[in-house]
Length: 84
Image 1 (cartoon, rainbow, N blue to C red):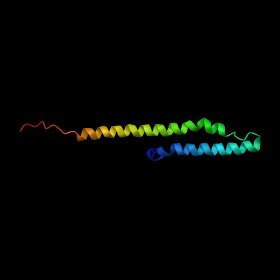
Image 2 (image 1 turned 135 degrees about the vertical axis):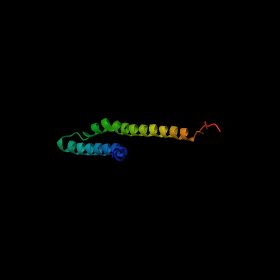
Image 3 (image 1 turned 180 degrees about the vertical axis):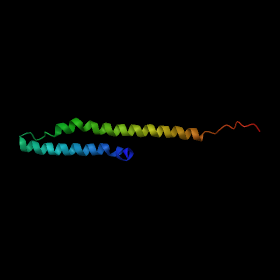
């Protein structure tokens, strides 16, 4: 289940962050003169989205490297050690 959800976690976080920003801005307009009250949260947590994508991509890169090494090991010609 984690493999199916993993790639989409950062997108879900970005959507939640956007909703938080929109509701914060709307609340700021009604509660006072501050219009960009949600922008602080948006700019504060925006790097987290990129960090989450970076973590997932680094895991994929590591797995790809391991698979390449396994393929290279399998592709090496085996030495026949039997005596005829």
